[in-house]
Structures are given as C-alpha cells and as structure tokens.
Amino acid sequence: MAAKLFVGNLPWSTGDEELQAMFSEAGQVTSANVIKDKFTGRSRGFGFVEMGSDEATEAAKKLNGKEIEGRAITVNEARPMGDRPERPRRDFGGGGGNRGGGRRDFGRDSY
Image (cartoon, rainbow, N blue to C red):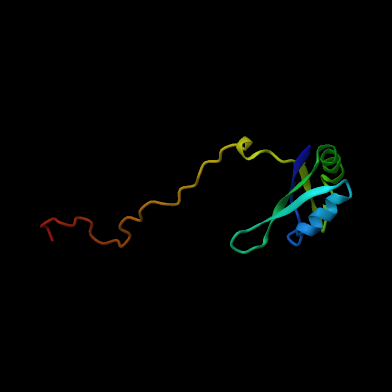
C-alpha cells in the first residue's frame, strides 16, 4: 500500500528529480512532485512524495528536520484534501464608494 508524504520548507532550487533522489535513499519512490506557482512556475517550497507505507514511515523519521541548503525540511504524512481545516476566504471585493470628496447630495435642488 502506498503512502503520501508532505515535504515542506524545501529550498527554492529543489526540483522533482532532486526530491525523488533525496527520498530514494529510504526506499522506492513512486512519485515526487514539487508544487510550483501556476503563474511564475517557481517552486512554492513544498512538495509531495509517494512511496510504500513502511518505506514512507522510515523516510519521514530519517529525513524530517534534515538540513538541505541551510533549510531544515519538514516531512510528515500528507492529509487528504477533505481533512484540512476550513480557512475563511478573504473578501477583497466591495464598492469603492464616492472617493472624490465632492458633494454627495446629488438630485437635490439646493445647489
């Protein structure tokens, strides 16, 4: 049975191949993906690794806190999308109102 690991605090220069090589020391890696920003294509500093469940447990113990390019990476079991706590959405909408500083009594006869 396969297990999915979350790998955080990755150096920005880490790619899929480097992530796979890092975890292949602990066992056979099924997949390794560094998450990239959809607009810039740059790494977002985290990724996911899939490997056998026993190997994943061993890899998490072995690699959690390991320093790579001056950064201590975080490795733990990935949570399914539905198990994450709901974060409130930020609402940046809304009207701007009258920001001109002019008169606001339009339609009155008292000009």
